[in-house]
Length: 284
Image: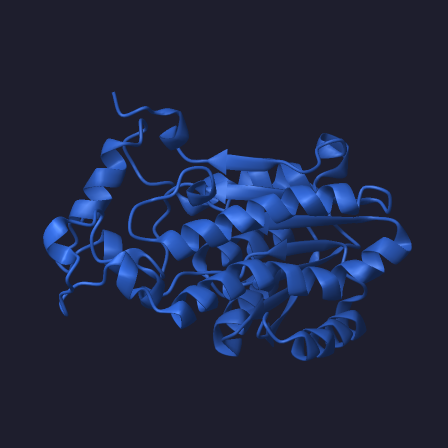
């Protein structure tokens, strides 16, 4: 993987939640390439360790840890293990997140004929509170709890860097996914709140808001079995001036900029869109 620019993170410890996924796995590998010792946290230990093994094969230092970001006791145990292995966390990337079918409507719009109910579709009125709760917890509490656990040592030392992962949904909600859109809006708001709250103890907090990138979570929604784009994918591309999906590596410049104290030391509380012009396009 080719980095957009050189950055020396030797001596730093980076913790990446959701590190077994496509985007956050790439973040973990980029930080490892820059010399950071990387703790790859994921609910799935096999995926976390696979990313860590790639970092080590490239000459870096890393280890995978099985972690449920919604269990604070588990997070505290992992923090102790990370500190024993690599030292105190300097950079925290809160990447754990995702959606759930029970927090998703079937159609873009509620039509009059849908109001009485149809077993084949899920309307707004059919959304499962538990599904919505799961999405909010995974994205919002899954950002808040790791920050509580890993940022305390940062505050005690008077330095640290936190990168949250928001979404373009936070700026303008997409159809069908109210729970995910609302949860990512909460992450953006929390990023701003936390940046102010931590401003006197030397911790910067910013977020990246990716536009549309094909990942393991959304691949089946965007790519059909024959390899062609789905109708939803085509609709996304019609509203993206660059007329394509992003490549995961195209997020790296923003990540490395935000973790670079010399380049972005006065950047705090921002949510950076990386969306190919999606938010700028009015549709006309």
